[in-house]
Structures are given as structure tokens and as C-alpha cells.
Image 1 (cartoon, helix red, strand yellow):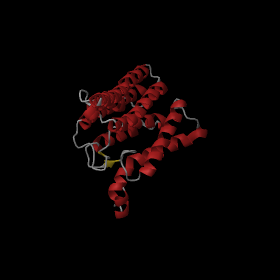
Image 2 (image 1 turned 180 degrees about the vertical axis):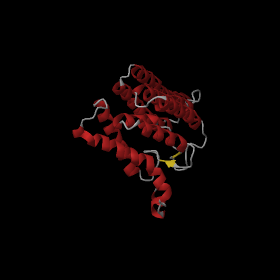
Image 3 (image 1 turned 90 degrees about the vertical axis):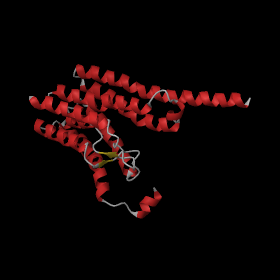
Image 4 (image 1 turned 120 degrees about the horizontal axis):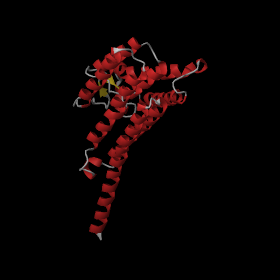
Length: 249
């Protein structure tokens, strides 16, 4: 009876763990749906699927830790699976969309797209990607977010090129970028700001990136929340953490 109960618990744990892998793998389906829409230049539909993939990516990590997929579903490497899908949804498809969008002129389209994909492939293989406080060392290749902001704001093509090149360089510099959930410091601010960013991103997508003047707050909202997420980590490096805050965390 005891052995039967133990076997039942083991099978249950294994099933839950593999279910998490299956949930993570839905990101590949979402990536395919996104690139099919990108091929048709249906940007609002593309970003819709990328947004769903972004949400799946935010959920599967806590689930994987909750159900201990490393021990209970060893046949599938969850980290590798996650990286493959992240490269598609965070890098490859957004870079393709930027090239196809017409926001870049002449050779800058080719140059910027190749810089994004080349540099990001190296970053995804960097063993020093994560810091001790669960942040990222260097810009974490969140090109899906960057490209969405560029679609919403539509700056000059030279501005887009410079922004993308600078962010690509910062992937390999010792600059901290926060994870809105896993970085404990300022999390009470970072998480709501991330939620606001998602809301503004959805609003921009629903407007099909043709935002009327009377709702410029969408552009300002997405810019300000993006700036916070870009620079919060660097500010944390510059501002020493108080002893009391360290103890409480």
C-alpha cells in the first residue's frame, strides 16, 4: 500500500512536470503564428501572438520551479527549451518585423537586423547572463519589447539604428538590467511598471500603431515605463542598498 502510494505520487509529480514542458513548448506555436502574421505585415496580430508568448514565458518559470522539472522531468532540458523559444519570440521574429516594417531606410535595415540577430545569439549562449540577485548582466535581448516601442513611436531611422546598436553593445557590458519579478530590490515598483507597460503596449497594438494625437498618453506611457525598465538596474548599481533593506529581503 505504501509502495503504491509512493508510485502514485511519483507519477503525479512526473505528469505535472512534463505538463510544464508542454506549456513552455506552446511558445513555439505562438512564434509560428506570429511570424505568419509578420509575413503578411499584419503587425497588430503579430504583436498579439508575441504578447501571449511573453505572458507564457512569465508564467512557465515559476511553474517549473514549483513542480521541480529538473528532477521530475529530466528527459527534456527546460532551460534549453525556454532559450530556443525565447530566441524566436524575443529576437528573431521582432528583428524580421523591424526589417519588413519600412521603419529603416536602405542598408540600415539589413545592418540593424543582422546586428540584432548575431549579437543576441552570442548573448543567449553567455554563461554569465544572470547576476546574483536574479537580474540580467547586459541587455537581456528583449527585442520584442524594443521593436513594439519603436513601432508605437516611429522615430527617425537613424535614431532606430543607433538605439539598436547601443542596446546590442550593452548585452556584453557589466550593466545590470532588472527582471521585473525575480529581482527583489524595487520589485514593489518594478512589477506594477511592467504591468503598465503591457497595458500601454496592448493599447498601442489595438490602435494598430496609428495613435491619434488625443491619446498621446499611450506613447508617453510606453516610453516612460520602457525607460524605467531599461535604467532601473543601472540605478541600482549606482545607489547602494541600505542594510535594513538587505536584511528584510
